[in-house]
Image 1: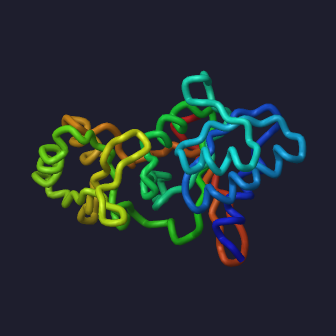
Image 2 (image 1 turned 45 degrees about the vertical axis):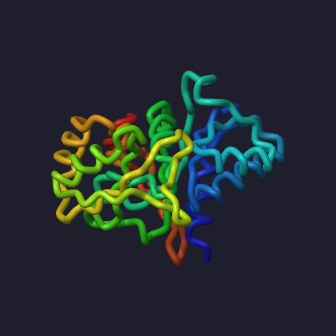
Length: 227
C-alpha cells in the first residue's frame, strides 16, 4: 500500500465543486494534485494556486486551471505535506524548498489539511532540520547570527551548488538540538535581519491525514488557529 498516495487522495474528499485550492509541494502532495487533475477532467469546477514551480508544471500538465496568489482574496482549502509533525499539530515544512510560498498560501486558506505517511509523526520537533529562507544579500552574516544561537545552520546545496528557491533566495537548514523550545526559536528568528520566512507551521491544520500500512487515518484538530 502506498501510504503517501492514500493520504493524498483521501484529502481530496474534502474538495467541493467551485473551490479554489492551495496545491502543495512534495512527494505526498504530488498524489493529491494528480487526483485533483482527475476530478477536473471529470467535470468539477476547480482552480488551484500552486505553491511551487514544480507543482505549477504538474498542474498545468493535468489541465488544472491555475490562479496566481495575487489573483485571489481567499483559498477554500490548502492541502500540503509536512516533513514532521508533533501531537500539538506543530509542523516542520520546507524540505522541498517551497516553505515561503507554502506559508503564504496556508495563511490565506479557510481550511488547511496536512497529509503525510506515518513516518512523519514525531513526539517532538527537531529530528528534521528546520528550513529557513534567507536573503542572498548578507547571507553569511545571517548564518553567523543563527550559529551564535547554537542552531548549527547549514546552507542548503543541491547537485554541488547552493540551492536557490523559486523566490531567488537561499535556505539555511537549522540542526537544532532536542529538546527544541519552539517558541524561543520562533521569537529569536523574528529578530534576525535577513530571515524572510521559517519552516515552522505551528497549529495551522484543521485535519491531519496520515497514511499507514493498514489504511488511512484522519485526525481532527479542535484548536486550529484557522478556526
